[in-house]
Image 1 (spheres, rainbow, N blue to C red):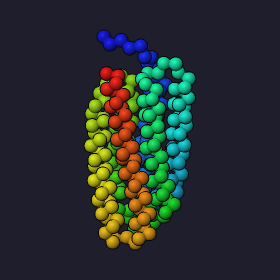
Image 2 (cartoon, helix red, strand yellow):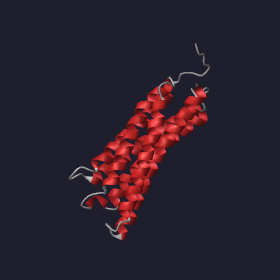
Image 3 (tube, rainbow, N blue to C red):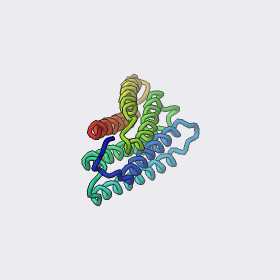
Image 4 (tube, rainbow, N blue to C red):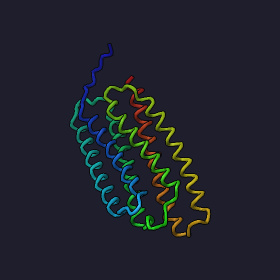
Length: 208
């Protein structure tokens, strides 16, 4: 039977889980942008509210680290994981804000590849939210980081095809510039999810 001198501090795992659940809320809001007659301003404002909640969770996590003598695993890894989860949320919020501020949802339709990227993000978010509670036992996590990395590859492919679409001449130059910025945020969010998964893998290996 494995014996550990590290405490099983539930508050850390709860904060990671809450942060990941916010990412699911974020991708669900982005999916609303594909609905006909959607109130884009409302979606953008709700994304900002979720992002503010995530900032508070990250702040609470840092306070918890600084007030805990012995943490469940390395402090540096706790900081890194909390920061990376927050980074994902920042990118998701940026997507919604830019689509609203640039008026891109007034186009007849957004590129199919943009919706494909949001779908990849939605799958990554749900995987991440499902994995975070398992950090406490450090069991059954390998499938999570493998699948999250596979999805990131799908996201890269959708991003490349989106760029091909943007530079095909279908859109005017100003619209291309605006949508390219949104596309970059979507791709950055996919990458950020992969960074979270890679950090979970590092933690699991250290603790095994």
